[in-house]
Length: 124
Image (cartoon, rainbow, N blue to C red):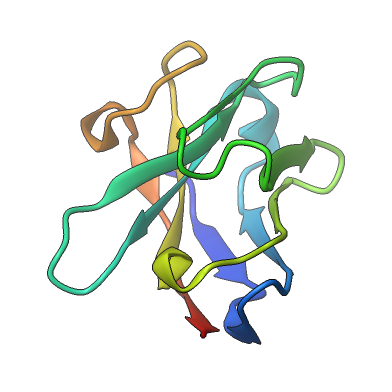
């Protein structure tokens, strides 16, 4: 079992930036691939970004490529999502997730553990 706790969400104006953090409970954190998903009201949960256990391999949704950066610090059991040039359409609840599978997983069903989510609201 892995417990994930997100933080760093909030209200920001369009063009602004935020950094989300996700702290994991287990010391075996480094053996999990980590991902970020988001869900806007009335929409399905969608993939945002993922990072391999070592941090060497990352994947991004086309909608965030060039604006968001995922990274991890295995010594701190934490994964980050740096978001710049935010747009109103980035407004959603952002979830951190852990997967036992290999890198590049973009489907929610491929992730085993989830955080409770953190709200990101981008005003026009």
